[in-house]
Image 1 (cartoon, rainbow, N blue to C red):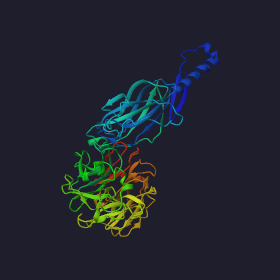
Image 2: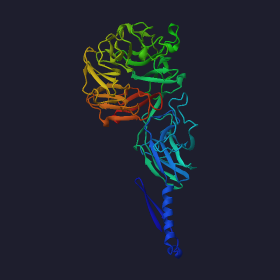
Image 3: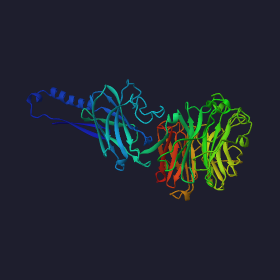
Image 4: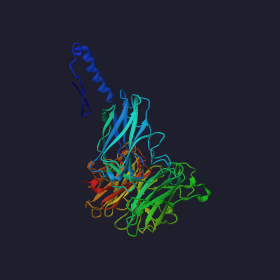
Length: 569
């Protein structure tokens, strides 16, 4: 018996060639023996093709029939048949929450020297194709195997002939409709067999990823709308979650377009959401088409003293489908400049008032464009209502600040900007009477942070400004959670954004225990490594759990829940 050894990564494979009986003719011909041995080694190496694998780190949407768990690519050189794929679920996984796991074939593509790490020639499950966001696109995917009610160890038996060159596959996960939002799934590809031999597995991503559940609150095509953008999220005094966003009917473009403010309401912590409401819309006001009466970029606030809920948004009229950011003019009239409008609800977000125009109260006529910092506002401990704002000044430079009301929303006022060349911001009361403004900075690289003790009359740059929080020039979210209002009994700042300074991906929730000076990596949870639009908004669901509504890689408005103890262990 001849024994041959071959290493594949950390695994040692042993191949044997048995000579059943002594053969004098072979032993007299060492050249022939050498040929046989060499042939065996060559065959073993070639038949064990290397397979490149990438595990995803994206939300697993409970309502989706197909969620991409793994991609893998077989570069077939000598192997003829893919026999089986073995998948192991982690010991802690609640298998009763999983409805099915599936194996798909994604076809092939011409080999290119530079694309060895490309594991998917197309997007198999779209987040943007209207009405086609929940299941694999059959034009690009061939279902090869399904295992329903899977056990801890799953075997896909397919015996599929391989094409010479790259062959693309992916594994899909389907959850049960009643799966908990707090469910986590871990899984690993244990083995892949080609021509009944174990293939060499080359992992291109970290292993042991925790796949977290989510709900697609809004998908492309819902309610006849092409896109949903710009999330805001609050929790009312009754524990109701209210999520607001742009309903962008024709496309994903910013104002001016046919845009209305949509609202989704949940009374069970985000597990289910009621039918979409429209709190703000202007239709054909002034005889102009709805595409020239868009209202968007909402911010939402709960008056903690009365439970009145406020939404503020920018209404553009008659710009003629040009972008409002560069084409809103100076002055005050709706035919000249964008209008700052509000609506309120006094029944926990069920019904909403007629629009309230507050432009005359807060806008300087020299400014070109005044709008809110999208996301959410706050109620200070003394009852003052505060919204973040941004405006383009007389020199066409953007600046971020706040607007506030001392009389329950009857009147509003703006003082001074916090920092120039900044735009979308979020505000938090970090101490009684002390406001922190966390701002999108047009210079990029990191967030700008300023503090005021007098409602914006004066501002001081925070020690963390332009240092602590990377950003790719994008909106972000910031909330303060007092020690007495969370299970950890620690004073917390929570923050979310794309955790990078280039691109809008790696949506991450972070926690700071020192007032925002530092945001340690051990106090972070990565939710979505995929590419998306990147906007997000946080709220506390209860004293144990933070909720996030954001523009993910898998749905236009995705909701997820994260335990504080997952952030701060």
